[in-house]
Image 1 (cartoon, rainbow, N blue to C red):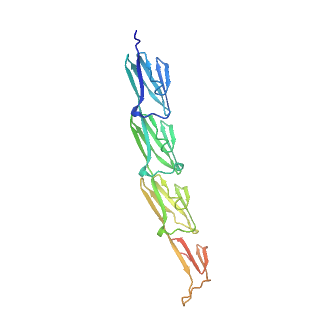
Image 2 (image 1 turned 90 degrees about the vertical axis):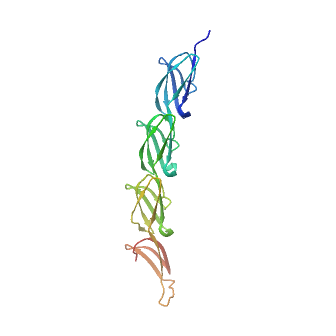
Image 3 (image 1 turned 180 degrees about the vertical axis):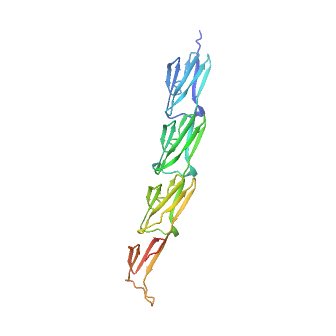
Length: 275
């Protein structure tokens, strides 16, 4: 007596295996098996079965298939993979940004670029997030079956330096976006990878306020911003050319003394007029 049976083999399109998923195999509404792809790849009596489940938190459309006597039915689950990178190879520190991949308003994955580069059911997704607190424009991601959907997050880089290679001994810079501070400190502290947009650089150099500088960051490029400063060097000489080494010197700005010294005085200052 030969018992009529066939087999079902369940695979994922493109060989993409999700990190998180659960499958259900049913017959006439009754669960026959559940779990991984191998757990629902079974030898079964001929008939019509339904495969359903959840992949990366998203329900897959039920797949109806027929098992025939003495043959194997292969069922391919329609999935694709999202691959997220940053424009121009400019990758910010993971601590500076957070991304979210969502489907119909439900968050599928969040975190770094690698954490949202996941295998998901075929469909249209949305990628958004923040970088240094600045919103990243929402990106629509169409994930085709069995393929990789590459998503490039639009960013550019801001590089800040002082004119003439002069570095003040005392200064603080502030980078802001829409009136909100996103970074403060040295030139390296405000030289960041950012979403494209218009930013404002301000601060003080040697106790003197800088005139705000408007900076436009463009996708996949480095925008170099030079802070206008110069070096002021003072000393006192007699008419005969003899330096007065004990002369008291001071520099003031807007009525306030910003530097003083004896004999000589050297200070790096924003461009402007001083007394």
